[in-house]
Length: 565
Image (cartoon, rainbow, N blue to C red):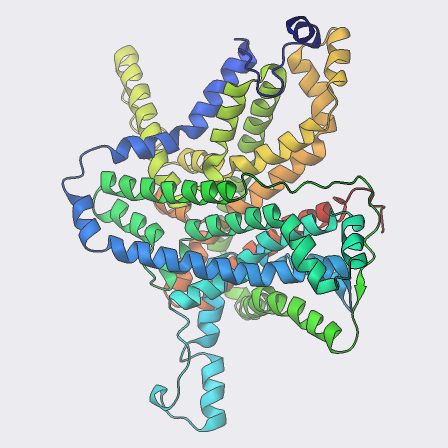
């Protein structure tokens, strides 16, 4: 077997260990992976520092409330996104009813709306002085809030509703992809055994889609943990808002301890989900794939399907977009000023730089694993991609120590060599933001690049080497042209996510530096919704781009799918 392994080349197969070669690609990839992962390591290092009893005080006062609200938020959003995501995914994949083709992509549109933006809109609509309650008072002759009951939008339940409306597309996205990739043979076998459409759904399709549902739910819950603008705007105390307050007002080690606790909760969530399906298998047992036949709905069933698919779109996208558009048009003359232009430039500059750096790092890591990969480098690459599972406030806390260490090292070298003090070179600058964004969204870039690179046959590498082209030349001349689609998709996703990112931007931005996200949040916090509309609407319109990319990718994901089928 050893001889066979030698003939097959220097790769580890299965679970066999292979020592990576210490060339420039491997060393560079290891260093890059460690740098990207350094904020996570810094959080735990800071958490071990003395906190002067602040953690004990927090644990006996506000921490139980933070934990209770976070768990309630978790459970509420989990129920909401499952209800809004799984059912419509089954309907548009397996059923035929009016508007199905439109709903296929339109159900992804709420993904373009940041949670804090939809919170601004519905607060303006549903608060006591909003148009909904004013209309109710005029209609029924009520004179004050004592005459009737109306749900408080600025509450934990309100936050659950807002997040469910914009995070359910994660569940819908992956669940629909799972449904349309399932074999017709299994569903037909279920029907032959006497099971109807709903029984086939619950006993065959739904269990097979469980990994995808669990993955989508995990993404939605991670985004729930990462959210800052919604819970802060609604005055709901969670771990995320607690970290922000403790970091700014109290004690850095205590904030790091809270961040480490939140990070452990995220890891526990991932571990529980994977543990729950450890001994179960979900793969297809047949390679026969045909176009899904679909169940033709008629009568009240088709209109119920239309309503079930339309409701999330109307509530999660149409109403917010309409309200923002109305305010933006009314305030267009005053909104399109030098301040908006500066905010737009800052946002585009940050998003562009972050997307470029993120994709470049992802290509370097993925190609390093392809050339000399083994468990060590592959494991480091996966660990460097864990930032997407970490709230932006946690990453902001963790990004400060590495940057401060680098600033002090540069200052010490310049002092010793040239007797010049450089001060803070990276901390408190745009570079700190770019670093945090790269750590936060490396998973998106790495996933897109890695999936594209794995589709390039290894024979391409061998042919390029035979023609005398080195690793760098092979990457530039062969691989990059072939993976251009994956690179552009990953860059687009990172670009739009950076436009929406709020907590890391608030904590790490330079003094008096604003983006579209921070400006919209600042206006809305001051109850200036009309002025917040234009930057918020700009973010929403930019977010539609990845929605189109994702929708097209899903339609092409089914084995044997024909264009236009």
